[in-house]
Length: 205
Image 1 (cartoon, rainbow, N blue to C red):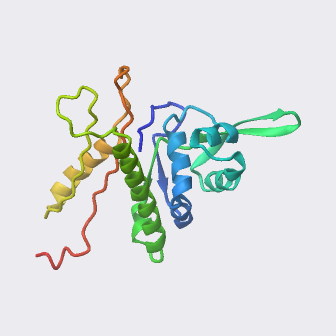
Image 2 (image 1 turned 180 degrees about the horizontal axis):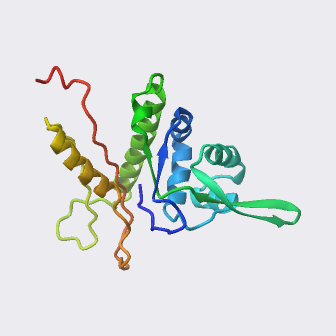
């Protein structure tokens, strides 16, 4: 996800505490809408502006906007009357979102959690493939315009003290902000971070 520019008027983080919120954000299209708006949380979007940015028809957004507003991902920042029609401007409700621990461990939430995870990774995969096809990710050494990509997957046995230390590092990484001094050679980057206890930890001993 492209990291947002910080806005004092928008909370840094929002906690998801309802299983319905997970189901709503588990839709790939709605996830893309929220990410686009969170790239600049200070901006208030009309349905027309958001549709043009996403390359879709305006009428395709209304149902999704309603669901995102109802479940707290976006909010109405402004309304005005335009030619007798109420025009609404929508704004991201937070810079980033995280799932409450109690929700992750609650019964009956596994499907919603899996859907949200699938949506995040499907979007990241699509963006990586698109970047490779467009030549935005290249292995050519010495190329001043080269854009690097890193992918890592690992597991480790950790003490409770080490878990706390890693969690702090993960949170710092997830909160990386756009470079305010970025010049013309700056580029958009995506970041997806996960740290979790493995379900096979007992059998790994």
